[in-house]
Image 1 (cartoon, rainbow, N blue to C red):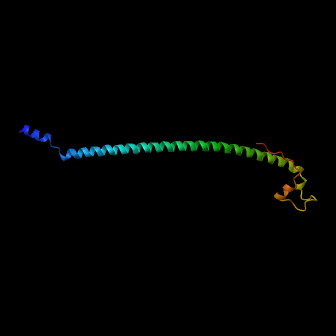
Image 2 (image 1 turned 90 degrees about the vertical axis):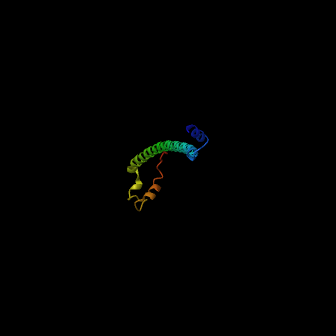
Image 3 (image 1 turned 180 degrees about the horizontal axis):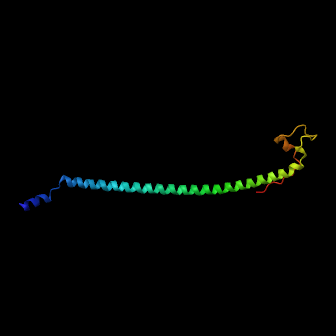
Length: 124
C-alpha cells in the first residue's frame, strides 16, 4: 500500500505548491520593487542633504560679506559724523542770524550752504 501511494504522489502537484510558487515570485518582485524604491529614496535624501549643504555654505559666505559691508558702513557713518561735528562750530550757515539766511535752513537746504566743505571720499 505504501508503495502505491508513493508512486501516485510523485507525479501529482497540489494547488498549494503552485500557489506557493506564485506567492514566492510575487514576494521576490515585491522585494525587488521595494529595494529599488528604498534606493531611490536614499538617493533623494542624499541629494537633498547635498543641496542644503551648498545652500548653507552660500548663505554663510553672503552673511560674511554683509557683515563686512555693515562694518564698513558703520565706520563711514562714524567718520562722517565726526566730520560734521568738527565742522558745526565753524559753520556760519548754522546760525539763523546770518544775513544770507532769512530763516533756519532745513536739512535739504543745509547742504546747499555747505558746498564749500571739501569732503574726501570715504575709502572702503
